Image 1 (cartoon, helix red, strand yellow):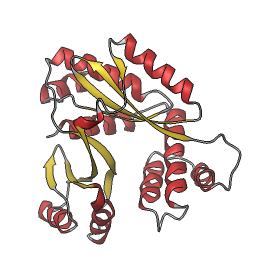
Image 2: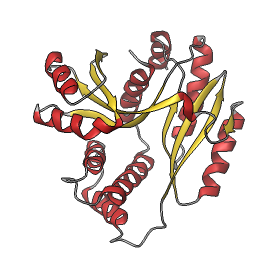
Image 3: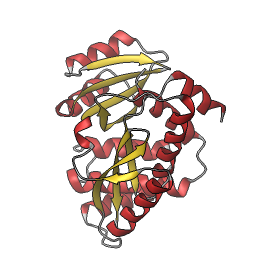
Image 4: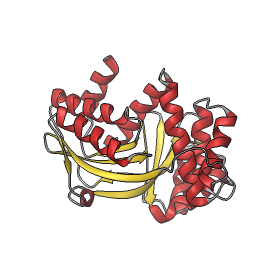
Length: 251
């Protein structure tokens, strides 16, 4: 199972028991607003918005909050400050690199907080391009495998142009080029397969394997970054082994 899949599974389990609903809703509202701004406010015509709304509903985000976020994105609601998408690059320590995607109303505040979190952990910010070349942007979908026919998902993914379909830990993961994002979405929908996770993600070309204790210390840095209100996604090239997952689940 890939490190990406391991970390996604861990975050799903954490999210199910996450008590910080305010922070979760803030992040989801920004995701919805950006999707609406970039592709329009009709989820029937905007796959990214449809998926963002699905994630918000799965987290029990109130309907009026979802509608308000859509209006903010389309410009109908002028109440909030303008949101800006910024991607930063950094080093987490022990040779592990990261790409940090942020959505913020205050760029200076965001970069100052990221610098603080990284330096406190022995890492540092990196210049643009120094890390990004180690990653590829991919379309990624996850489908729960319980009760599903793997061959059915496999065929739907490959017919839509996916590069790889794999199954582990109760999930089937479909990975493809960015250009296949909508085609995979449509193929899964046509096969009546509900996605648990979907989006464009940065996937490392090579992963770095560390001793378990070192890996756990790096993942604590990742968690601290993800807990920042302005951070939407953190991608890294740390290999998350079965031993690391077992230790995380014990915590």
